[in-house]
Image 1 (cartoon, rainbow, N blue to C red):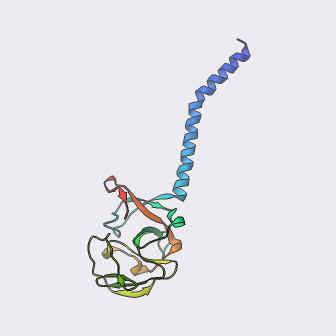
Image 2 (image 1 turned 120 degrees about the vertical axis):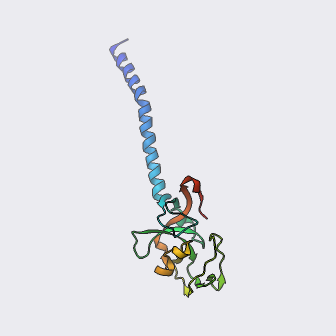
Image 3 (image 1 turned 90 degrees about the vertical axis):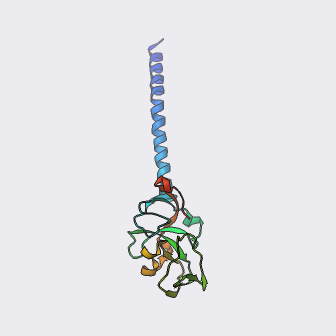
Length: 185
């Protein structure tokens, strides 16, 4: 064996020895890129800090928000949305969308009426006695939002409408704590 052959063999051995390390580095880089893309453009985790959405969401629940929903779906009545608080865009809120653009909303003692008809709210654990409000017209590109814990929710009844541009995405999954794991309805 010549000296050239020995170097070639040594070079091949070094390449074989470094191949698993190189593959590991490539896998980590790909995982980081995929995670960045998913977290930035598709799903984002959020933490629930208040009782305003009890029983649907509890204090300290960790939720996933689908940001792609806004590109391909329409916000419907009953959707739980995460958005920037209209009076301070640095603050993030999570509430249920009740009034949609162009609808007339009225709150009576016995419930919420949209365009003169009482809406059903199966996600509430009980019936509430409301302070009357309205009728009001929900502006175009805006929504009327309420927490599910109606007695303890600062929502559109207090601070007004949620502009569509404030939406971050639709809350769709509780992932922590594990005993609450599941889809958000």
